[in-house]
Length: 142
Image (tube, rainbow, N blue to C red; front, side, top):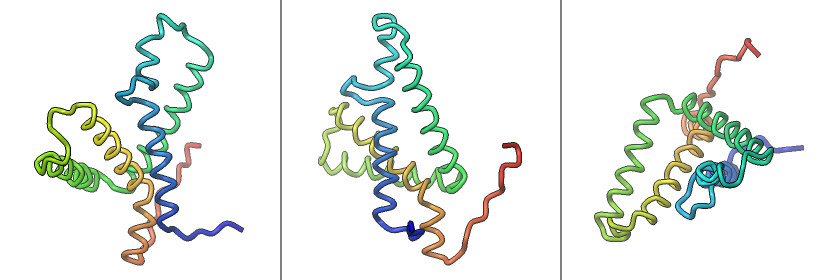
């Protein structure tokens, strides 16, 4: 029987999937769906390309919907402000040089993945911190 307890491992799984989603969509190494799309005239439109696009779209819809629902506008603003100022701090401290566009891109993509993973996990985290349970409206349209 599966456990319904939320722990760091649960968050880590959500983070790993968010990293896969974000980096499969775009990354500076040029091995991403974005770069594949740019070269579609050379490679041709294939069933694998279409299937990959649909899988990525499903992943983005799931993560974005859960993140927007659980964090809301204020939570999203705070999350992006937190991670944006964190990026600013590590550049200002000289940990990452400001002219290293590739490194900053990797960091921004990782921080975006963190926002998505936190959004997917926020209801569990809030319940742990406050003891309150979120009740979302059900979709009667399905």
